[in-house]
Image 1 (cartoon, helix red, strand yellow):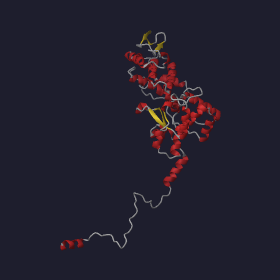
Image 2 (tube, helix red, strand yellow; image 1 turned 45 degrees about the horizontal axis):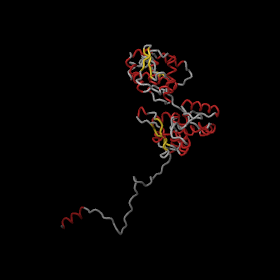
Image 3 (cartoon, helix red, strand yellow; image 1 turned 90 degrees about the horizontal axis):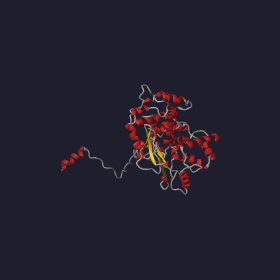
Image 4 (cartoon, helix red, strand yellow; image 1 turned 90 degrees about the vertical axis):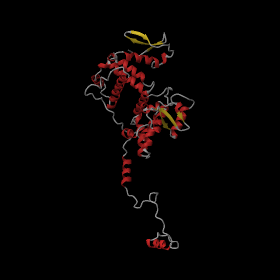
Amino acid sequence: MREPWWRKQTGHWYLEVGGKQIRISTAPDPEGGTRKNPPADVQNEWHRMMRESRPEDMQLGDLFAAFIASLPEGSDNSQTTRRQLGRFERFVGREMKVSKLKPLKLTEYLQKHPHWKPSSVRTLVNRVHAAINWGVRQGLITGNPISSTPGYKREGRNERRRGIITQKDRATAEEAAAPEFRAVLVALRETGARPSEIANMQVEKVNLEEGFLLVPNKTAHLTGIADRRIYLSPVMRDLVRERMTGRTEGPLFVNSKGKRWNIQSLKKRWEYLRGKTGVKGTLRSYRRTFISTAINETNVNPAIVAQLAGHGIDILFKHYLEENPEALRKAVEAITGPRPVVPPASAQHPPEPEESSPASPSPRPDSGEDASRRRVDR
């Protein structure tokens, strides 16, 4: 059951079921030709018809199409997922039944890409599993035929990203970049944001008065918080104001053609700039540089840095903090260095009270004998 399509002649959405074309929209959709995905009511009917079919007959192409349609429209993640699953689908064949999919198919596909790094392999494998597991949760298929294979382990691994970009390389890159891309590099340097977050910044999400802007929250599916704040430095605030001039909505950063950057176009432009100037690092290096500088050189509280980066502290240290030998050396000196013998006066160690003068001796408690004499006298 392929993805629904829109027919211009009638304005309705259709599905092909058993070799027949069936209309599944209840009313004409005049905007159907401009939609990337079918409207919600059409998708619901499509999913219902797939759920009522036999799970063992579900085809890979139908499952992938339904999964992609469930992703947030227009996000970089959905575009990358569509591209990667589409390539795997063409390799395997869209008519292949999901229930017949085995780990061998993944292995054969990955052998066609021997230059992929372990993290790229894991990304592709994770997305294939995400689509299949989504189908299980939706009741479209009965189980994941790959992960249920005895002894199966996911291919690839997530490697820790390493390396920062030096101040000299940053200056060289910004000087050689075209104005539109230079603005992106400055934003990366001043915010420590992810490249995808820079691409998704919107004019209508900027609050210059309070000095922050909102971007889609990467962990929204876990936290339920749709947006996260990115706070603006003075340099970033001036840049944002300049980018907003004359506009009240739309992408904050655009290319020379006035279109929104996406993660792929940013990467391609950076690779071109690296070849032109010889600078080292990736766009993600800006984020690691921001975080490492904050902790190693400015001594900012790591909890504050984690909030600025939109991460938990454990992820911050595991993936982004670069080892700085000089900062570690200074820390050892501070820990093992000499300390004053007498601690300074403080609230915990108040100064000793001054002795009373002879002219006004302080009263002393009565001895037992004096107290007994007074009781007898009374």
